[in-house]
Amino acid sequence: MHNRFADRINEGLERVWKSCESGRVKTVNVAERRIGRLLQENQRASSLFEISVKEEDGHVQVDWTKHTNDTDWARISEGCYLLRTNIRDWTPQELWRAYIQLTEAEEAFRIQKHDLQLRPIWHQKENRVKAHIFVCFMAYVLWKCFGQMCKNAELGDEPRQVIEEIKNLTLTDVVLPTRKGTEIRLRCINRPDKHLAILLHKLRMQPPLRLQQNQIL
Image (spheres, rainbow, N blue to C red):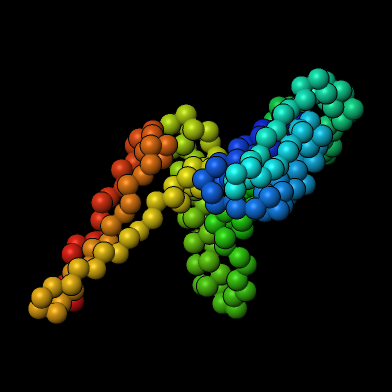
């Protein structure tokens, strides 16, 4: 569990670094707030990292180092993890798997709330409640399927960072006027940069050049 918190901090810092390199993070204050939230969510491993944020030549730079010499002391000082239950016929391995399933359910709720941005909606009728649960469930299934795609492509099993990179794909509407007064509209997708092209190739994804056929208005 300690390594999990440390890995989350390291992955989060890499996302902040990439956002700074691409220019999406323009001020030091924005980068520091993102890093502060990251350390707050993973406090048990935050002391292992030394992070510096500065601005040079109009760009925000993030550098960090991980203190490996404090890892052993951190593990010893954190003590043991104890699970208490009234079930007597389970093995320790079965009990641990059941507990991990609970944490995975909590993670599913966090994914739906933060990543998928599905907020609670108060319904009054049973059919609407079931419909809302079904939409949330299908969204989570798609999320997990995409996570499996990332795992098969050796990109990890968390699609958050991959989705942030794919967001760089943008749509462009090209409007071409004609002599007859009509307009031809083309909805095109920009070409991915080298880094994103490699990422899409590993995922075996090929974005279309256009989303729809030519329209004449």
